[in-house]
Image (cartoon, rainbow, N blue to C red):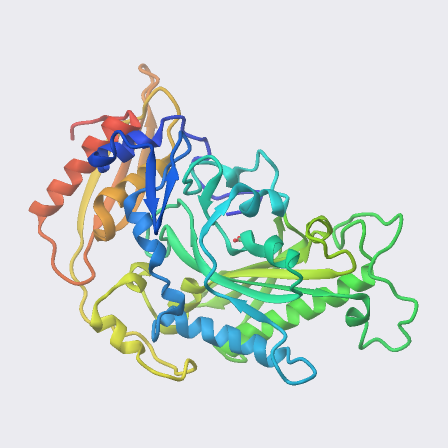
Length: 437
Ligand code: PHE
């Protein structure tokens, strides 16, 4: 999401006050200008767009829940870094933070990471804002600067992250990330280079180019890049086996340069598994680490777990069903299992067409509303048709909503009620006009 180019259909920020949607969905909140999240109340304002269905997820902590598939993979990744980086007494160099609060400031999520003020990733249509100052972290990178400022040089941050996105089998508004940061001094960078006495990590009058930042020496960057890539290839090999096919793709992130993405070839296609790069020196300087160069990466746990265990739908991670959870009840996280669907219930497919309002409209607002009203019976929402009326100049969107429950059969009757409610609330809160079919 924090790449410069985003794959979203619509990046235009919606002007409407989300609180309206909020007040319709949760009528008791109509006149309230506060929301309760975990054990605290927060002021709301025109940026507020977080609803109850999202807030409910905040204390679930699937990544540290015993026997949960996401927790197994977390453990495997942590073990990999513990083993790869012992200190001289044999204890792990990396410290692990898997319990940091997901409510962060704009400063943490964006400013401290040098995300430009007008960057699309800050849009209301992309994030869950509590108010204009606070949001649910959109990535675990939000904690980089804070932890570096505490003096840490090697750490992992693992936690839930929140993004407004499309809805399908691989996207869910909440998922889990693992972030790693490693900072090295000059001596650490060059420790394996013979006769490296004269080598430096910084250089005066340097130039920024594709390979490095202005302030860094090319030799320091190349050593860090090599270590980072070797570790990450080692990690995917530890997870998927030595024969896994992979490739590096150049990328852009506001907080690293150079930056890359690692893709693996899985089930006949290339799949992105993580983003990484050399941390921008300004971030380190701002956090007080003045004599170091560092790398960082961030990866999504769900995606890895779906591949490793053959889990077909991202909603299953939230299932309370013992048919799902039982299959992961093992103590050794390296246990190799494939998920066996207990049973698959049929979907119910309903379409909805409407004219867009004259003002701004973002598909993500609609996706969110559908999720908020329909909850987990919504399997997928996709835009299947879009056209502009030649005379009226109005645009029409048709969305297909696929309803399916993971644990039982749904009836058309109960879906009609939900579908109608989605239509009514979309008219009231998004300003759309439903088209009769
Ligand atoms: N935070 C980035 C994301 O969520 C991933 C990343 C982390 C990239 C650290 C570079 C360095 O997309």
